[in-house]
Structures are given as C-alpha cells and as structure tokens.
Amino acid sequence: MRSLETDVLVVGGGLGGVAAALAALRGGHSVVLSEEYSWLGGQLTSQAVPMDEHTWVEQFGVTASYRSLRDGIREYYRRSYPLVERARADHHLNPGAGLVSRLCAEPRVGVAVIDAMLAPHLATGRLTLVQPARPVSAEVEGDRVRSVTVERTDGERVVIGARYVLDATELGDLLPLTGTEYVTGFESRNDTGEPSAPEEAQPDNQQAFSWCFVVDHVDGDHTVDRPHDYDAWRTLQPEFWGAPMISLTGPDPRTLETVTRSFNPLVDDDPFDRVADQRANAGDRELWTFRRIVARKNFESGFYPSDVVLVNWPMIDYLGGTLPDNPDADSHLAASKRQSLSMLYWLQTEAPRPDGGTGWPGLRLRGDITGTDDGLAMAPYIRESRRIRAEYTVVENDLSVAVRGHARPATYPDSVGVGMYRIDLHPSTGGDNYIDVASAPFEIPLGALLPQRMENLLPANKNVGTTHITNGAFRLHPVEWNIGEAAGWLAAFCLDRATGPRAVRNTPALLEEFQTLLTARGVEVHWPDVTGY
Image (tube, rainbow, N blue to C red):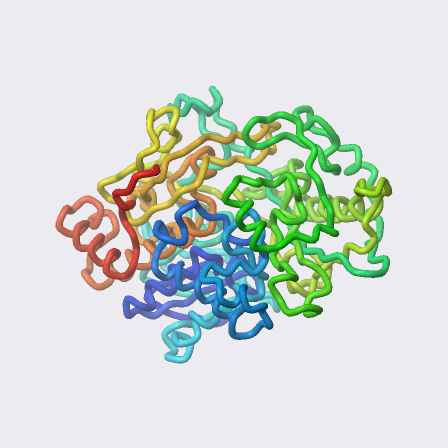
C-alpha cells in the first residue's frame, strides 16, 4: 500500500474532475487526480458522448477554460487531419456535423486535448495522476475527510491524504464512503414543491443510463454475434413506449407522441447544409446524422470510407435497474451492454431500409474509436448521480419557464457560474416517460456546492445540490465543467485564505472576493444583459 499527500485530491477524472484539477493547479496548489478508466474526460471521452450545449455557446455562457477545450479540439483537427479547405477555414468547425451539437468529434481527440491541458502540470510535479483506479474507502474525522484510498486495476491500493477532497465521480461514490448526507432518485413534492415531482419520494426511480457505441458503414458483412437474450430485448416494450424499444419507434421527448425515426447510413449530405438544418431544429428524426462524430465530406476524399456515428439513442436507455447503492449494479451494467449489442444486431439484420429490404450488415462496430475490445464505449453514459444534501438545492421552480412566467436568467447572489439546458429527463427505472420542461438560463449557486455538514468535501460533477428534476438541466458537459472549475477554485481560495467554503458563501466580503477571482479567471458568474432569452 502506497501513500500520497496533496493539497487537493480530485477523485474522478471526468469533465468536472479535469476542470477542478486545472483550477486548483492554476491556483498554485498540488493536486492528485484519480480516475477509474484509462481515459480522462468522462462523458466526452470514455462515455463517448459529444458535447451537449446551449444555443449561445459560441458567443458566451461557458468558462474560458471550457472554451479552450473546445478550441483545442478544433485546432487538433486542423493540425492533424486532412480537412477539406472550407472545413479548415470554418471558425466553428464541426468535424462530425452532428445535429446534436455545434462540436461533434471523436472521443480520442478529446482525450488528446485534455492530456495536453494537464501536461505542463504533470511536468512540474504538482499534478499526480493515479489511473486507472477507483475509490474503495475513506478516513473521516468528524466533519472532515482525512484521506481516500483508491484501488488500481492491478490490486495496488493508494492512500491519498488531502486538505480538500473533491468528489468528481460519475455516481458520487465518495458520498457513502465518507458518510456525507445525500439523496438519490425522485424527491417528493412535499420536500421540494416541484410540480413535476411525485407525492412520495422514490429514491430508486432514476434516469436511465446507456452504454453507447460507435459505428460506420463499409463494404462486407460485419454482423456481430447474436446476443443470447436477443429475443427478450427484441420484444421488450415499456407500457409508455408505443413499440418495442429495439426499433426506430418510440416517444418524442417533448410531446410524448409515438414517432418513428429514420436511419439511413447512405445519407449523402453536405455537412455545411446539415449545420444550417441544425439551426432550423432538424432534431433527431434522422438518426445517422443526429450524433455523427465524423462527416467524411469534411475530410479529403477517401480519407474516411464512411461517416462515423455515435449511437446514444433512446432505444439503448437501460430501464432495468439502478447503479448507486445497488448490490446488483454489475448485473445491470452487463445487461445494458447486451441491450446495446441487441440494438446493433437489429440494425444489422432487421432494420428497414429505404429500398424495402431489411438490415445493414455493413454497419461496423468501431471499438478502436472508443478504445475497447468489446466495441462499446469504455464506460456507461451516466445521467444521474447521488446528490449531496446541500446548503441550497436548485428546484424546478427556480428554472421552469412555466412556473416563473418568463425565460429571463435565474439568478443567485452567490453565483459561481452559468448554465443553460432544458430540464431533460430520459425515461426512468420507475417507469416514467420523458419529463421535458422548458427552462431559463441559470446561474450556479455556491450553496449547491456545499454539503450541509462536511467541511472539506466538495462535489465536482453531477452530485451537486439539484433534485432529480433539475439535474436534467445541470448534467451536461459545460455545466459539469463549470461546477468542477468552481469547486477547484474554491478549494484553492480557502487554502490561500485559511478559511472554509461555508464562510466564503456567508461572508459578503469573502464572497465578493471569490466571485471577483472567478471572473478574472474566465468564469462567467452572470449571463450577459442581452435580448433573446
């Protein structure tokens, strides 16, 4: 067993964890960053999901360091890939021309850019990476975490002592290990006052997670082995779905009407026209282009034999069980993989084609792009985590346009960042259909980053003070990054001033100083005063 000591320990190397580590390092402090998987970047990389962002992302509404990540991805393509000239010259280059985002790219490029952002700090010795490793225990004295023990895949355990501990894991893994108070699933309407909440709390009713995968379409037969329980997945039909899940038919997230999407790997579109379609709300009705991460026409002729597409569709949302605090979590993870492989097998063998035939055997699973032997993403795509019982919990009434009566930004006096996304809840393990609520641009209150009791443990991912409902707006890439960055700067600020996070929030002079620091470091703590909200 090995021991390390550091100023700031960040457990979890997703987007929030990377942002937290960078902030604390830039604040002049030593950092140990541990991560369960061999890639840093979480939902962007090991989970393989391209950036989900708001309408104004190219102009404002994200931190400077998050913008550096986006710019770095684009520059990596310009520097290393044979782009056609108009793609290379496009200031807002979208390599995949996917409709879900203004920046759809391969996960490995995100890894490369994140590694480059951290490389100078590794060179100085102030950053130590412990990877791959997962947390297994913690030493706690009263309301303070003294150390966290992580276990590497080879069985070695590393005890890491730190003055501040940031939980940036995907499921809030440090919360039970440290005895930090937290909630899971649906809170009750009596607890939160939210109109979309149930009468009674439902802690095991959580958003579906998904095991994503990447495909292209080339010559030959690339059909995967038929999953042994394919027939069960092929006939699975939740009451509210309107069709078997393994199909192209299912509920529309906003209207809940049953719709049938199209899927055509032979789409021969112009990436620039498709980007224009995105502005016109083309939506996800054509699945091949919706989450495309490589548009072959953005690259020199013949460089890519096909577009490359990420499959993160409703049909692979796993509804069979939850992950946090569940002794059967491993079996649910395995079942989620089989559901995804069943979807792929159906696409290869049964999916309707425009020519009247069935099946696309040329679909090829691209595990080389996701960095795995089984062809799926390295990690499951997690939408909902354990969440701290916070000094302030953001509720639906704070964000909902319908409740508030307007779409102007939701503000807080202790803001440490901004975000924007609809309250977007996928179907849940409790049998709920989509919950989709129009929400206003929002600020991120510092109170949502402060556990009610613990003094030196801070959330740095989706485990902040939100509810099951408002998590739907906070869970996407730029907000997770902003949360982590704010937590990292908060730890550095408290170390420099020998104070605590609670004092920062509750002392006007300290709060103003901290917000001024964030602003100077490129964190937008307020939305600009513009029309169009």
